[in-house]
Image (tube, rainbow, N blue to C red; front, side, top):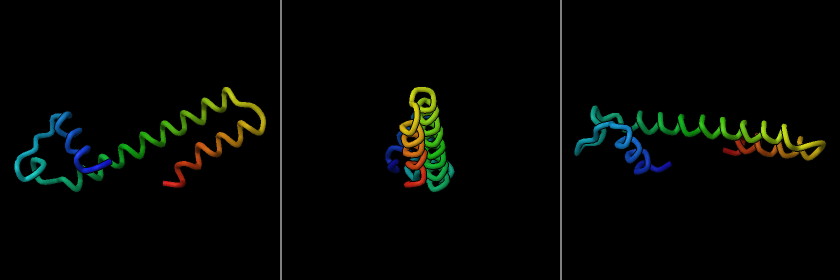
Length: 76
């Protein structure tokens, strides 16, 4: 996620931005928060995908696909 994307989302969320940056000047904190939220959302989605696999895959395919999905979080 780029800084421009974070700023655009912040504006959309109603966070006021003046000529010096975010109101209060906490750009680093806002960026860090945005990245934490994105990482959590990605982890939740990855786990949801693994659970779908649990329902619809069988045998060794099930285990391999679940492991592959969950391993993507370890690559980041």
